[in-house]
Image 1 (cartoon, rainbow, N blue to C red):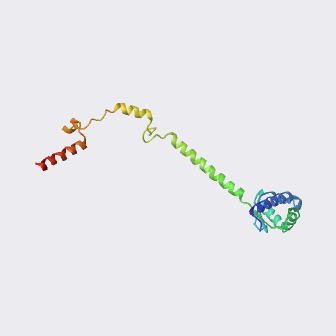
Image 2 (image 1 turned 45 degrees about the vertical axis):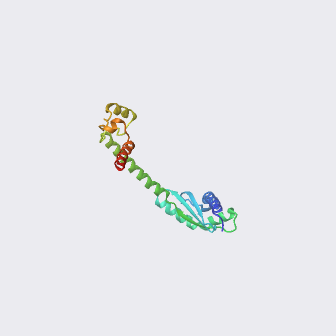
Image 3 (image 1 turned 180 degrees about the vertical axis):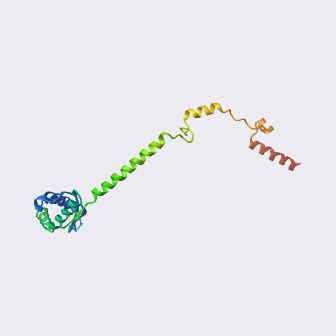
Length: 183
Protein backbone atom coordinates (compact mmCIF):
# COMPACT_ATOMS: atom_id res chain seq x y z
CA UNK A 1 0.00 0.00 0.00
CA UNK A 2 1.40 3.36 -1.04
CA UNK A 3 1.29 6.44 1.12
CA UNK A 4 -0.94 9.40 0.40
CA UNK A 5 1.91 11.56 -0.90
CA UNK A 6 2.83 9.00 -3.54
CA UNK A 7 -0.83 8.64 -4.52
CA UNK A 8 -0.99 12.42 -5.08
CA UNK A 9 2.13 12.32 -7.25
CA UNK A 10 0.76 9.44 -9.31
CA UNK A 11 -2.57 11.28 -9.66
CA UNK A 12 -0.81 14.41 -10.94
CA UNK A 13 1.17 12.32 -13.42
CA UNK A 14 -1.98 10.55 -14.65
CA UNK A 15 -3.67 13.91 -15.08
CA UNK A 16 -0.90 15.24 -17.32
CA UNK A 17 -0.65 11.97 -19.30
CA UNK A 18 -4.38 11.81 -20.04
CA UNK A 19 -4.59 15.51 -20.89
CA UNK A 20 -1.63 15.24 -23.29
CA UNK A 21 -2.70 11.95 -24.86
CA UNK A 22 -6.42 12.57 -25.24
CA UNK A 23 -6.45 13.99 -28.81
CA UNK A 24 -3.81 11.65 -30.32
CA UNK A 25 -5.39 8.53 -28.82
CA UNK A 26 -9.11 9.19 -29.35
CA UNK A 27 -8.74 10.74 -32.85
CA UNK A 28 -12.42 11.53 -33.22
CA UNK A 29 -13.72 14.90 -34.46
CA UNK A 30 -16.76 14.57 -32.16
CA UNK A 31 -14.52 14.77 -29.10
CA UNK A 32 -15.34 18.08 -27.48
CA UNK A 33 -12.98 20.53 -25.88
CA UNK A 34 -12.10 18.43 -22.80
CA UNK A 35 -10.34 19.76 -19.71
CA UNK A 36 -9.08 17.27 -17.13
CA UNK A 37 -9.81 19.04 -13.85
CA UNK A 38 -8.73 16.46 -11.28
CA UNK A 39 -7.57 12.88 -10.83
CA UNK A 40 -7.97 10.98 -7.59
CA UNK A 41 -6.13 7.73 -7.01
CA UNK A 42 -6.80 5.27 -4.20
CA UNK A 43 -3.96 4.75 -1.75
CA UNK A 44 -3.26 1.29 -3.15
CA UNK A 45 -2.89 2.83 -6.66
CA UNK A 46 -5.43 0.40 -8.15
CA UNK A 47 -8.15 2.82 -9.21
CA UNK A 48 -8.08 6.35 -10.65
CA UNK A 49 -11.10 8.62 -10.96
CA UNK A 50 -10.59 11.17 -13.72
CA UNK A 51 -12.77 14.28 -13.48
CA UNK A 52 -13.28 16.28 -16.66
CA UNK A 53 -15.32 19.14 -18.07
CA UNK A 54 -16.46 19.68 -21.65
CA UNK A 55 -16.95 23.03 -23.29
CA UNK A 56 -20.22 22.95 -25.16
CA UNK A 57 -23.84 21.99 -24.89
CA UNK A 58 -25.41 18.86 -23.39
CA UNK A 59 -25.20 16.96 -26.71
CA UNK A 60 -21.45 17.63 -26.89
CA UNK A 61 -21.02 16.40 -23.31
CA UNK A 62 -22.89 13.17 -24.07
CA UNK A 63 -20.75 12.48 -27.18
CA UNK A 64 -17.56 13.14 -25.23
CA UNK A 65 -18.66 10.86 -22.37
CA UNK A 66 -19.36 8.08 -24.90
CA UNK A 67 -15.98 8.53 -26.62
CA UNK A 68 -14.10 8.49 -23.31
CA UNK A 69 -15.91 5.31 -22.25
CA UNK A 70 -15.15 3.52 -25.54
CA UNK A 71 -11.47 4.58 -25.53
CA UNK A 72 -10.89 3.87 -21.83
CA UNK A 73 -8.65 0.85 -22.59
CA UNK A 74 -6.42 2.80 -25.01
CA UNK A 75 -6.03 5.61 -22.48
CA UNK A 76 -5.22 3.11 -19.72
CA UNK A 77 -2.53 1.51 -21.93
CA UNK A 78 -1.08 4.94 -22.62
CA UNK A 79 -0.99 5.73 -18.89
CA UNK A 80 0.55 2.32 -18.07
CA UNK A 81 3.34 2.72 -20.67
CA UNK A 82 4.31 6.18 -19.45
CA UNK A 83 3.65 5.91 -15.72
CA UNK A 84 6.38 3.44 -14.82
CA UNK A 85 4.72 1.59 -11.95
CA UNK A 86 4.08 -2.13 -11.66
CA UNK A 87 0.29 -2.02 -11.82
CA UNK A 88 -1.66 0.37 -14.01
CA UNK A 89 -4.71 1.78 -12.23
CA UNK A 90 -8.13 1.29 -13.75
CA UNK A 91 -9.63 4.53 -15.07
CA UNK A 92 -13.07 5.90 -14.39
CA UNK A 93 -14.15 9.06 -16.21
CA UNK A 94 -16.52 11.31 -14.26
CA UNK A 95 -18.04 14.49 -15.65
CA UNK A 96 -17.14 17.22 -13.20
CA UNK A 97 -19.93 19.40 -11.83
CA UNK A 98 -17.77 22.52 -11.61
CA UNK A 99 -19.58 24.47 -14.37
CA UNK A 100 -23.02 23.78 -12.90
CA UNK A 101 -21.79 24.64 -9.41
CA UNK A 102 -20.14 27.81 -10.69
CA UNK A 103 -23.33 28.83 -12.50
CA UNK A 104 -25.35 28.22 -9.33
CA UNK A 105 -22.90 30.30 -7.30
CA UNK A 106 -23.11 33.11 -9.87
CA UNK A 107 -26.92 33.14 -9.51
CA UNK A 108 -26.61 33.25 -5.70
CA UNK A 109 -24.07 36.09 -5.88
CA UNK A 110 -26.33 38.06 -8.22
CA UNK A 111 -29.24 37.63 -5.78
CA UNK A 112 -27.01 38.77 -2.90
CA UNK A 113 -25.92 41.87 -4.85
CA UNK A 114 -29.57 42.66 -5.60
CA UNK A 115 -30.52 42.36 -1.91
CA UNK A 116 -27.55 44.53 -0.91
CA UNK A 117 -28.70 47.19 -3.38
CA UNK A 118 -32.22 47.07 -1.91
CA UNK A 119 -30.86 47.43 1.63
CA UNK A 120 -28.62 50.31 0.56
CA UNK A 121 -31.58 52.04 -1.12
CA UNK A 122 -33.69 51.62 2.02
CA UNK A 123 -30.86 52.91 4.20
CA UNK A 124 -30.43 56.16 2.27
CA UNK A 125 -33.66 57.69 3.60
CA UNK A 126 -33.48 56.09 7.04
CA UNK A 127 -32.69 57.95 10.22
CA UNK A 128 -31.34 56.75 13.50
CA UNK A 129 -33.75 55.66 16.22
CA UNK A 130 -31.76 57.56 18.84
CA UNK A 131 -28.77 59.81 18.53
CA UNK A 132 -26.66 59.55 15.44
CA UNK A 133 -23.74 58.45 17.61
CA UNK A 134 -24.99 56.60 20.72
CA UNK A 135 -21.54 56.20 22.26
CA UNK A 136 -19.97 58.42 24.86
CA UNK A 137 -16.82 60.31 24.04
CA UNK A 138 -14.15 61.84 26.28
CA UNK A 139 -15.33 65.36 25.36
CA UNK A 140 -18.86 64.59 26.59
CA UNK A 141 -17.63 63.35 29.96
CA UNK A 142 -15.71 66.58 30.62
CA UNK A 143 -18.82 68.65 29.85
CA UNK A 144 -20.97 66.44 32.09
CA UNK A 145 -18.60 66.88 35.03
CA UNK A 146 -18.65 70.68 34.68
CA UNK A 147 -22.44 70.81 34.43
CA UNK A 148 -23.16 68.66 37.46
CA UNK A 149 -22.82 70.16 40.93
CA UNK A 150 -20.87 68.27 43.55
CA UNK A 151 -23.20 66.13 45.67
CA UNK A 152 -23.91 67.52 49.11
CA UNK A 153 -22.44 65.77 52.16
CA UNK A 154 -24.89 64.07 54.52
CA UNK A 155 -25.85 66.06 57.64
CA UNK A 156 -23.26 65.83 60.37
CA UNK A 157 -23.95 64.34 63.80
CA UNK A 158 -22.32 65.52 67.01
CA UNK A 159 -19.66 62.80 66.95
CA UNK A 160 -19.03 63.31 63.28
CA UNK A 161 -18.68 67.04 63.81
CA UNK A 162 -16.14 66.42 66.51
CA UNK A 163 -14.17 64.24 64.12
CA UNK A 164 -14.80 61.00 65.96
CA UNK A 165 -14.55 57.84 63.93
CA UNK A 166 -16.80 54.86 64.22
CA UNK A 167 -14.14 52.96 66.12
CA UNK A 168 -13.74 55.81 68.65
CA UNK A 169 -17.51 55.91 69.17
CA UNK A 170 -17.53 52.18 69.81
CA UNK A 171 -14.70 52.61 72.38
CA UNK A 172 -16.68 55.38 74.12
CA UNK A 173 -19.72 53.11 74.32
CA UNK A 174 -17.70 50.29 75.91
CA UNK A 175 -16.07 52.75 78.33
CA UNK A 176 -19.52 53.86 79.49
CA UNK A 177 -20.55 50.30 80.25
CA UNK A 178 -17.29 49.64 82.07
CA UNK A 179 -17.91 52.64 84.40
CA UNK A 180 -21.31 51.37 85.40
CA UNK A 181 -19.96 47.92 86.23
CA UNK A 182 -17.32 49.31 88.59
CA UNK A 183 -19.69 51.40 90.57
